Length: 311
Length: 269
Image 1: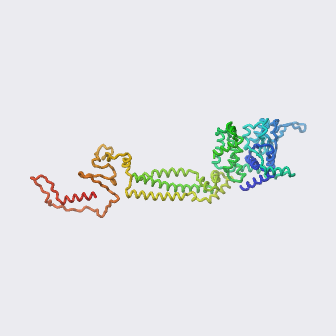
Image 2: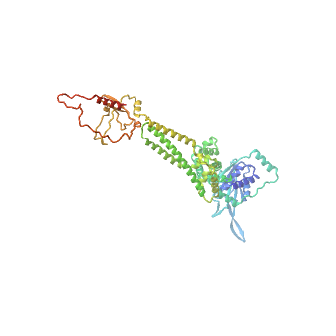
Image 3: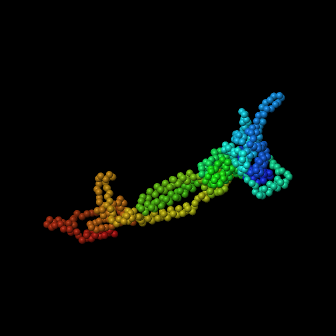
């Protein structure tokens, strides 16, 4: 297990050459990759969200595509469409795959796309396949959707529906760097001419093997019970929560805790893994009621209260 | 996997033995405390087995069903959450992570000493208490010290009268036949057990208190033997004669009167 820890430490170091700080963000993106799931990054502009995702894709030698969401973005712009191709005087329809046909798909400002376009991503995120017309196309493994969201500039945006936000394993809050980190950013990008590059450390097969390894991580029965209690508490704590998380959150939290344990180089899941991952896994699946919002309570505060209650 | 299964079995076996021993000590202590109380109130000492047996059975069943590995994790923080994960997942074969975990846990378990879970101080105090209570029971029994529950109740009720009239039935169990005796006339309290009780005997108009101490009763079997063969005289003593003209007059010789008096004096001692 020490070898795995060394591998992930090397990965973090390599990403650190390009992205200054944000180690927690990088770690949580790695968790979503190991869980073979998707992540939603929310933060203000200019916090290296896109840079982080692009760097990780270079690290893993994965095909990367980027979709910039706008209100006029159509579903076919994402999934692809049939085009008429003329060859030797004969015309035939040929499927032109869209940007979703990649290993890592970065959807920038997903809340700016229309609900119709957002739902086009649903099938690819959950089923790892795309249906165009009557034909279904399987997406190449591994496949992840990493979407970003801007918490400001909400005018003219379309908040993600519950059905779609539930398909993201984790919601990562990207914060501002510290003063020292910002100084380093300035030195790296405002002074140095050379753009930092990363080496390819892992390939697709390594990622698939690590994903299988993550599932094999053992977890104690009482920790599993605690996870179910936590998710159930989000539905029963009616004094602050209006809508709680679904059983998909229970699966997601256990998987995320396992991935966290693997990244730390452990051979078992600890309760601190569950407590750490509860926040990114649950924060986009809970809707606070008016009373909680009136008190100025945040979703993270509600999760803290639930964790204390289920200890 | 076999090695780890043996490890789990060993843990359970060691803890179960410890539980049995501790519960046995506790059950003996409960037995002795109950026996002390029953001795004080002159109850049947065999009833002490009931609470002791109940405690032993219930406590052992509850403690056997507990998860012993939680006690180990509490005492050895390096095994915290590792041991329970290994036990919950040891059946997962062909899992390299579980194999690695089992090896690590087996290695750490070698440093676990079962003596850590044995409260030697508490057990020592319990054994000492058992010895003291045993001597106390012996002392009470030998010296016939007890609390008279009836007199205690009378004292509490403030009833200064003599013993109430009791009746007991002799003969068959239904009580249809047999004489009903007024024990009050005899001047005593009806009791099935005469040993150690104050018996009131009345001879003529005299009131005598008799106390029989069975522990001080000695029987020398060597003195007890076959009845001596006595040769009785054919000749009647002079004092026994018949006289038709004289009215019957008590004529007990002085020696015989003294003999009777000495006899009664001796039995009253």
